[in-house]
Length: 366
Ligand SMILES: Nc1ncnc2c1ncn2[C@@H]1O[C@H](COP(=O)(O)OP(=O)(O)O)[C@@H](O)[C@H]1O
Ligand SMILES: [Mg+2]
Image (cartoon, rainbow, N blue to C red; front, side, top):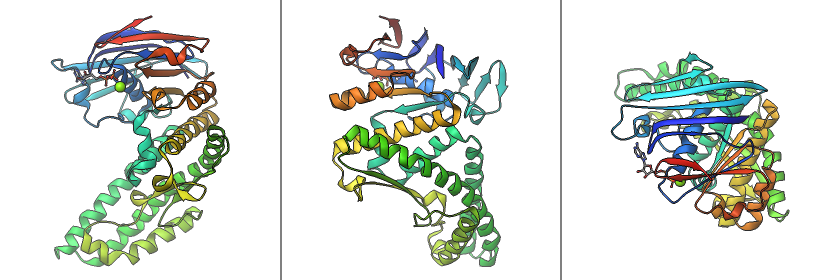
């Protein structure tokens, strides 16, 4: 996956830019608030995933303008593609090779990228929802059909939660829940199965990368936690487990007006030498864990699609010590990478790269 040309107009602080990236390393250098992350964000949107900054697309249109547009020319599997996204106050339109696509999900699996930023640490440090977000994006990138299962599950979950409210108000009988529990268990087990299969592949890769980064000092172990357990199960068992758990928690769900089990409550356990990395690992170890997860995610995209995803590294170099910086640059030497930074001196050792200076929403090649 190689971006050959990138254009943006009225995207955040960018009035109009066009750049022709290097097929390997691209360094976007500039002071704070100049538009580096804006460029990374707009490239990321071509993956078909939501922005890593906001759900409000209106925020991305340059203040004072009515619409924004971005365009990407990229090579994938030896073929040239062009994709365009336009957004105005009310809607977004997606076009791939001149053909309009209904929504962003139609871009999933077409242009593949991985983004690593200081926010990526939240996968280790923050609540389970951050780990689910990581998983949902990572799985969608290699299995685009997953996104539809997730949406279907969310709709059924919303219906079940609405029914819980009706039951608590005496407007519906408790027995009406059973049909929804069955449906939710079937839809939920699909989501869980995709996640389980993904983590099974991710875990050994992340473990190996962590070993390389840390010089084998500790062992990283990842496990999928569903219905409170980490044990692997087939789809039939998953449906069964979830249905039983819903029955068990029915009374408290009715009291709390909330469904307490299912994929929306799942988590990934990330441990170093058997201890939860969230509570026990040092900052440096947590960074290595987050980096290992991201590189493992990129590795699986490559394994499935046969080509390297584009790697977007936003403001991370300055947070890594020199050993980890070197490891990362060496690991990614054959990938197309976009690196934002305030100081391009980290990269003097690289052989092939282009440097773009970002200043007040304008870009010039150095
Ligand atoms: N919709 C918008 N219209 C105009 N400017 C915006 C908009 N959204 C964000 N910005 C500006 O973009 C700049 C931030 O750009 P960013 O890419 O995050 O900077 P950095 O170079 O530090 O990564 C800020 O100056 C902010 O005010
Ligand atoms: Mg930034």
